[in-house]
Amino acid sequence: MTVTKGEPARDDTEDPYVPSARRTEREAYKRARARRATAVAALSTLVTGVVLYLLVVNAPGWPRTKETFFDRGYAREAFPVVLRGLWLNLRLLLVCGAAVLVLGMLLAVARTLRGPVFFPLRALAAAYTDFFRGLPLIINLMIVVLGVPALRLTGVTVDPVLLGGAALTLTYSAYVAEVFRAGIESVHPSQRAAARSLGLTNRQALRHVVLPQAVRRQVPPLLNDLVSLQKDTGLVSIGGAVDAVRAADIIVGRSLNYTPYIVAGLVFVALTIPMTRFTDWVTARTARRRAQGGAL
Image 1 (cartoon, rainbow, N blue to C red):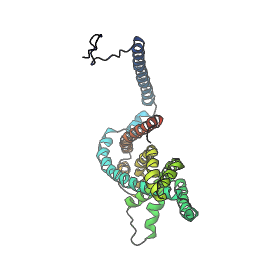
Image 2: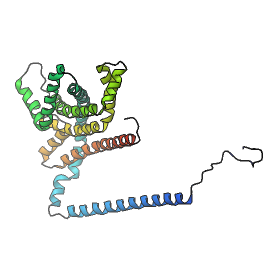
Image 3: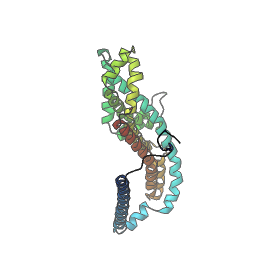
Image 4: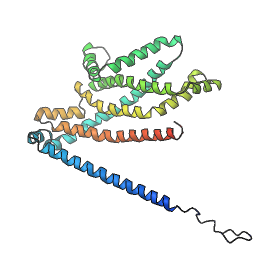
């Protein structure tokens, strides 16, 4: 309570702000519009789902398709086996993901080195990225998983899991290297010049000024590459590694029923969706901070 001479008592704890009638009406209109949009979207989604369901179940070949691809008995049999195989895919994702980030960063730094003395290193890094970005992943896997054991090199593993992981690392490091290089080149040259003016060497400026900004800016595309890597770990099955896909393939070969493939596909989708939504959230958050002028 505040009392001033000649003025009535005033309560400082009261909020003097009261929304105007027009603002209250506008906010109520926005809420009603949002509810209406949500209802329309839900209704249109329901109608679309029903139409698609009717088109599928009324197709002439639906009974045979249901028996071949959506058999509950084979689904129950395949689910635990596919989950056990998925553990191999997850381990490959973690190990190959870490290796891809390290190798991709080294390649990106090599391609951005300045001076004629580093030209051979830049040329080798560029040749590496061009070659493995152009080579289809499935062919790379076949060459590494099937070709390396045929050489019979002493001390070189013939484990299809290790060889498949190496092939994945070779291919994805080329893509990630370009992502990192784009991030490094997006940092304004004045940042490096300011670091040099403060007494930092080129190496220190790259490590403490350029790379932190480049990595933060490229987090969304890096997460997208991680999602793709998670799906492509299933390709190591071509060498005989028993992952989720190979586990499903074994049951299919015995039963001639393709339901296990559907189970394996749904397991990968269930694993990918949270990663995709997280990537979308990071992308939107980065865009908001950039629009607001915040740190990148």
